[in-house]
Amino acid sequence: MTETKSAAAVGAVGSNSRNARNLLAKPWAGTVMLLIFYLVIIAIFTVLSPFFLTFQNLLSVGSNMSFIGLMAAAGTPLIIAGGLDLSVAAVAGLSGVVVAMGVSVGIDIWISCILALIVGGGVGLGNGALTNGLKLNPFIVTLGTMSIISGLSLVMTGGLTSPLLIDSFNWLGSGRILGVPFPLIFMLIVFAVIWWVLNFTPFGRYVYASGGNPDASRMLGIPVDRTQIILYGVSGVAGALAGIFVAAMLGAAAPNAVGQHLLTVIAAIILGGTSLFGGRGSVWGTLLAVLILGTLNNGLTLLNVSSFWQDVTKGAVLLLAVGLDQLRVRAQN
Image (cartoon, rainbow, N blue to C red; front, side, top):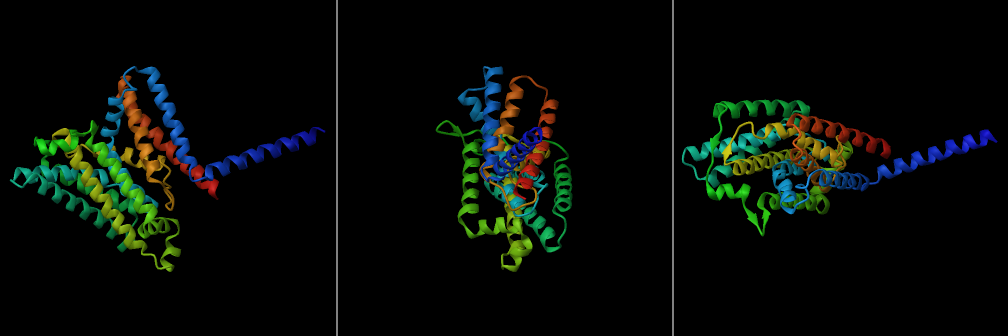
């Protein structure tokens, strides 16, 4: 009798384990878990701080994270396709420097912005050419590019901040449309465009196929290398856009203003459900993760928590994201 009960208990445990794995394997499971986690965070900070749950504060969270969102939005399809760009935050810093230097020599502010976008796209395409043309490891390539660009930004400015106090330009970072910050609106538009491309165009299918099984995709005639090179270029342009928005927000270009946020960008992409192994991911999951990380920073700041502990929190969230990614991969195998 006892052995029968034990066998039944073991069978129940095994059934529950299988059910849990099946649930994790669902494509929407990660997003639902993130949403629940987000609501819990909001509830906790609402109880702990009377200043948290206000319309203006929530808008502030989205606006302050907009430049992170731009980089994470472009980085999501790149990682889905099997690539990785660690230089994107450095490109953002270089972008602001290019704008400031252009203005300092008499070039129109908007032409300077276009030049910054061209430089960012060029860096991205260079990363793509090195990783796909020469078959070099993307981690090593973009890590090296990050170091080179960061160093060049410091050399070009001497490590100093350059003022950019031009009303029309500064509006990009502080302007509002119907009371909603323009950076937040722009970020949401970028996410919507990337979502549409990934889900309703042949290029979007190439992205998922390139990361899911690149060898089989090449045999089927899918341009895996070209797809990745394009995505590296898009990542570079997104980094340049992020740098322009940061410079507009600050009213100045600082060469190291964005570099410290690379960890946040990567954490948002992975926490949002994009697999480090490629072939799977969602831009809406990334957006939700960006908001979660922004809300954590905002809530901890309102509670007067040291910025050092905020860095600890970011690292813990990144480890959590990687752990969840591993669980999802195992559940699908």
